[in-house]
Amino acid sequence: MSGTLIILTPSGVLSEQRWEGTGKKSSPPLEMLQSAVDGYIEHVKVRFNGRVRDAYVNEEGLINGLPFNMAATVMTQNTIYEGCILHGNLAVWVPDPKASKKWKPEIDPLDQGDNLGESPDY
Image: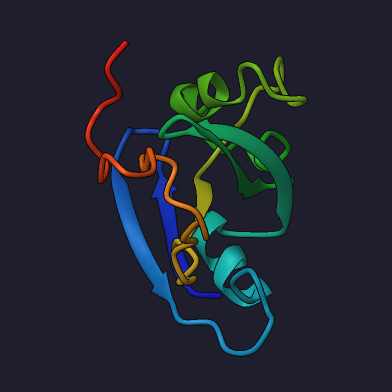
């Protein structure tokens, strides 16, 4: 599955890294994630564009003295990670929408029989 890794720095700078997946692998490779957060990764969930998404931070951000990331910390609200204080870059994984066939009902819910789709008279 392909998608985009959105990287948010503590200073608020956003950047994107595109990843074109092959096969059934559903997330970017470890090396790409480690590069985005400058070290070992820690998985977190954040709210991004109205959805809960998988995200990654530097596991040793606090220990290594990385700057506090206010925006990333706020993005953990209303997730199981609420209350975590995040340091360093945040990398949010946004997979591409699935390319699936649009579902079509066998029976048109707007079809009212002989009136050919016109609204029924009530």
